[in-house]
Image (cartoon, rainbow, N blue to C red; front, side, top):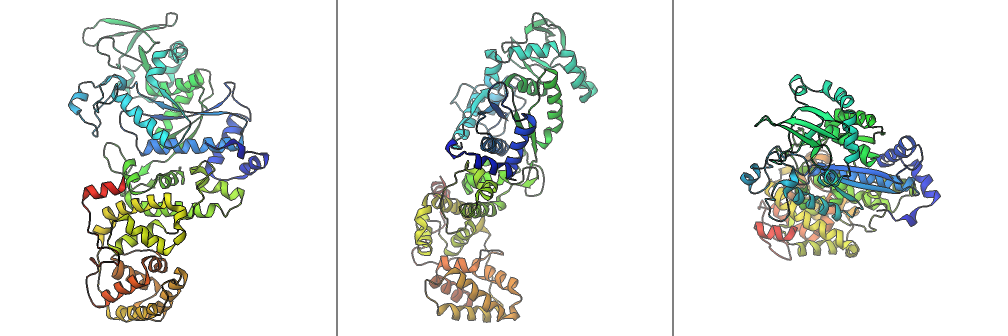
Length: 558
């Protein structure tokens, strides 16, 4: 979290002028929801929810990190008001279907309908499936360095924390039913009840009609479908849980939640839960509705379909900071979340990091890296872009990080100052290139007009020092392109260089690439291209590393 010694009135005034969306949300929370005053409970409560029926995923990450960004902005605006973040797990929900990414599915299928914390752990490491996934969730939050309080629905219900609120729901049963029933189908209305009894015999969470209820004793009565016997249960002590929309509103009331985000698909649910929270005599939390992620075809990403980019896949191919940037960018706009966006997002992160230390205070608060790094981004200049690393790997035909590191140090001897991040970037770039760049390379031979232009470029490069700057190299490439209009305009000229020398349709700033790859090596690939030889197996001066097997790739990326 943000160091409080950074706060002073000048910084607070600066934060009032910041237009980054987390500051807009924080100002709305402070000025509108709280009317500038601390809550009576003594702190502002931010909540993020997680359904542990499956493993933590992109939606989980996005909601947590965005919520924390608003919390950080709020702390900048109102450092005198304490804040807390509750990471709430709905682990008392009954399992509806077996996730397709867990082992022992037949065993888990025998426990359909039971609370997630009552189902044996198929991984064999924890007390239950719910406890296993909760542990992964907490490990994930811990890795981000967040201050948070983990909240388990099972514990909240069974410990009695929700008892007073549950009795209040029973007291306002009719008013809640009047809000919920109009939103349901005719068939669902016939069986709906806010309370879901946990069957004492089967331990399953039941969706059954409530025959009668007793507000004074705090009990409900339902009829067992198999035996027809009437069963009376208290609504407290974990004997019942609430239908999730009622549960959401009850939780807001019981915990005093001030801020919670949710996806576009839950707009109606937020509206209904807010009405229930109001019935329970509490002010609903402020809400931000974020858009959902899309796959490469523009379809909504679905966990069950697996048609998107999983969090573990992103973290294999790119740093978590870049994923944080992706989550920061335009949360109210639907965005494609697929492999091909990774290089662009990584480079946008590096560019924002480079700009940060050249900006004034207002600009810094509007820079995404302020929000990604809790106001204290690392002071390091990364001399090469992710895209440049990918093209280096493509050209020099190696997946050896030591060789890539030698290229980088020759290009930028001061790169050691950014070594921690840069070494991670190299490992990510190797994994990404091995999976997506190298298999798709397709070189072509130059046309006659392109041969003439390449010969001219070769002659110009021969005259240069090995320490010629990337800017000067870029200028020379431009000049050669202008002198050979028969190749086409400059756009066609650079596209030809990408296809002939790199085997790709797109590429980096060629001056930067030539400087990184080396003039000697660049002359070699141009000479090979002019001679009509295959560039796909061109060796470089330090090694002739062969394409690794899966085990080598895994070793590099871990």
